[in-house]
Image (cartoon, rainbow, N blue to C red; front, side, top):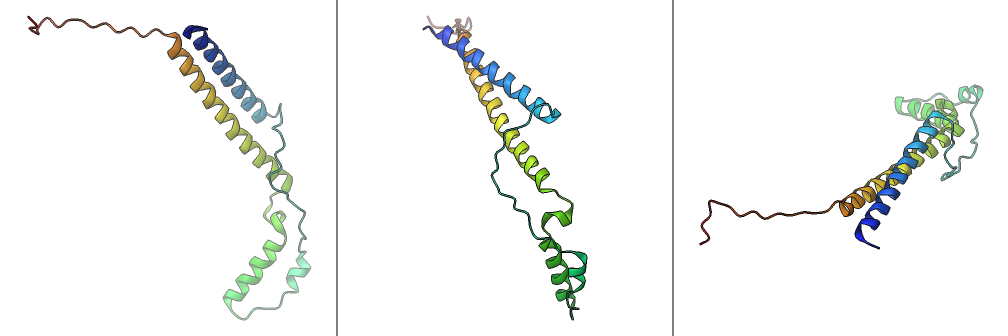
Length: 136
């Protein structure tokens, strides 16, 4: 296999990888395609603290104790007290990791296509004699 054949093959593979990753990114961001489920973290349903349970907390005597009771009661409810649904958090993580993975595939396709173009394009070097130099 000659150098040009390898170059054209690398160029084709690189263009296909770039096209695939761009199409997958567009489809996943528009909602037509779902990224694969990575499930890197297990989000277990946490026990939520109701408003009546928060009111039952004893009155603090200092400002730092008041802050610790408020922050402790807020964090016991998990992410639901902050308005973040666990399913949407998992989807955001999956989409972010999927996007980064496809960016790596896009970069790999670019590097392969660049290498293929360099192998296809002939390298011509012409050495011209300088008329000002005296080489007699």
